[in-house]
Amino acid sequence: MRSSNPVFSRRGFSRDNGGHAGFDAQQQHQQAGAATNPYATNPYATNPATGMPQAPARTNVMTIDDVVSRTAMTLGTVILTATLAWVLLPVDPANLGTSYGIAIGAALVAFVLAMVQSFKRKASPPVILAYAAFEGVFLGVISAAVSTYLGAGVVIQAVMGTMCVFAAVLFAYKMRWIRVNRRFTGFVMAAAMGFMLLMLANLLFSVFAGGDGLGFRSGGLGILFGVIGVILGACFLALDFKQVEDGVAYGAPREEAWLAAFGLTMTLVWIYLEMLRIFSILSGDD
Image 1 (cartoon, helix red, strand yellow):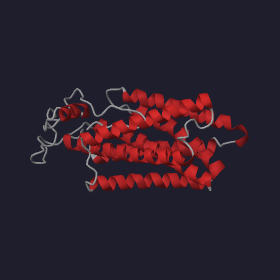
Image 2 (spheres, helix red, strand yellow):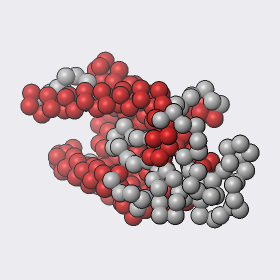
Image 3 (cartoon, one colour):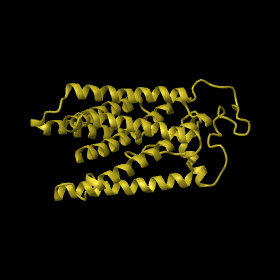
Image 4 (cartoon, one colour):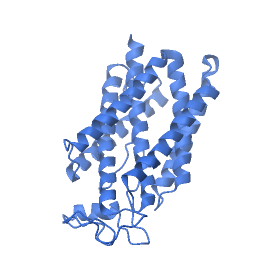
């Protein structure tokens, strides 16, 4: 199951030179209606009939521990640079443009790095960690600005909300309350595309017409679209979990754990930003 992210699309697990079939191949099998193992060319993949490896275990296949450790490194980089940005780049209300300039610059660099990784055939840990570092700077400055004008409680609420969404989706996925199949994937991708087009239209209107554009980022509509954004992020978390589960079951190479960490990080950043918007609007209305 190829997974994509609502912020940036990325490649699924790919076929390497050693014969590991990846998620792109798996998606093709699913579209063709085949029920065969997309990693059949990998002699170390799990046999779906017996649940046992088809050949002696090898040390360079991806495990859950690999995904957890890479995700911890990537998210840890985001948190570290966000904290440093908060402390070392304090928001000055008298010179707010400088802070926003730093945030926008960091976001653009993170976007470019994310696109570079998305179009690479294999995971590049330096690119992924560099993306996480610049994303952290962006989040740190934005969070500091929100804390300055609305109070630190808003940031804490957004962090707690993100953690709750992650835990709830993971629990629902493990309990099989969420079924990730081709129909689910198609619906989520179509909904995300529509959501992004609306946000882009709102941005263009705000640039040329001033104010909040179409009003999708403030007031009642802002809260509604923030909730929709969180729901979409939760759906993409389910797609990410499915990608990880399939990769472990079918014997994806170990380096692909970085792709899983990359996708999970982007999804969590998406959810945090939507949560921050919701609580900022609610706090501003009080």
